[in-house]
Length: 387
Image (cartoon, rainbow, N blue to C red; front, side, top):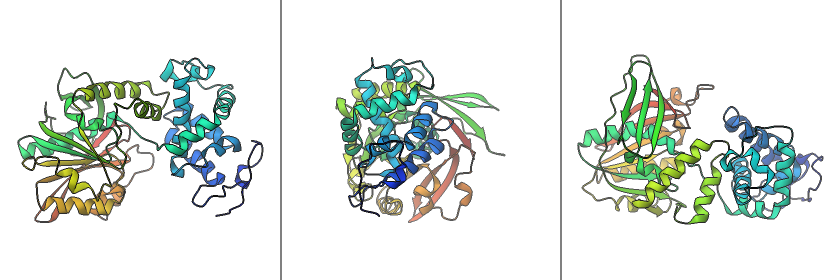
């Protein structure tokens, strides 16, 4: 990587010419590429505000320069917009807020959006740099509980009794409350199927398509859970106001329904929080599992890519040699599932399908992984293709 450095002060200059001088830090060309990828691959068709801001930011060397200290360049787009969102929350009467539905704004993207955003973040450059340097992008998507519920319920049905839940990469652990949420699965053939406690404060909707010849099993009204543990390299304590505020800021500003669900789930959790364990997913898996009583069959689940996927799966297999373990994988195929179910290119994301993940239930018998592929899933938790 080039080591020369110049301080960029002119947004009209090509940002590809400028570099960071510190080893391991991303150059501006790489950051620009990550912003464009975020706009095209994540925000397009989902968030007009974030697509516009990320696209414009990629062409502005001064704004890109705010990101030179990010630890993970792939998070550049999310971190830039989460940091700005955090600062808009802190100044809800600033004119920028009119573009942020999260603080009551109602204006759509127009010609003034980018110039105002640019001025806003550059005037607060010191704080922006502090946030992107010290924070990591945290995705909090409560709606994914609707994807997990059928698989967790299938494991509980086999157990015929209460289970212990262990979430890998839990963040704040809101998905560990999945048995407390109400669900409505909308199908074309059978209409609406309901599951979970009917009087739950939090209701989730999911549209279900059926593959040819497939039939969605009727989801149970309840799943009995005897213990809940989350494992994460950096778990989030929702009792910490600053940590709560950052999670809130990581939710996209023009998706107020996601913010509402996050708030409801967080309030529900405060009365009876799960136990969250800090540690490496593979290295601390056995220790976290010991916090679930041995008499409870263990249902381990993840909704994101597993860091060190093969090592985590090996740790799961080792754990399954000592106790009853079910693993619910709800993430892209090549983020862990491929370790127990190789050579399945049909489960990789199909371009334009909207289904980026695979829902699978794995159990080990005599050391051998028995995998049931249940569905393809949409990342936002609102669509399911049952296989």
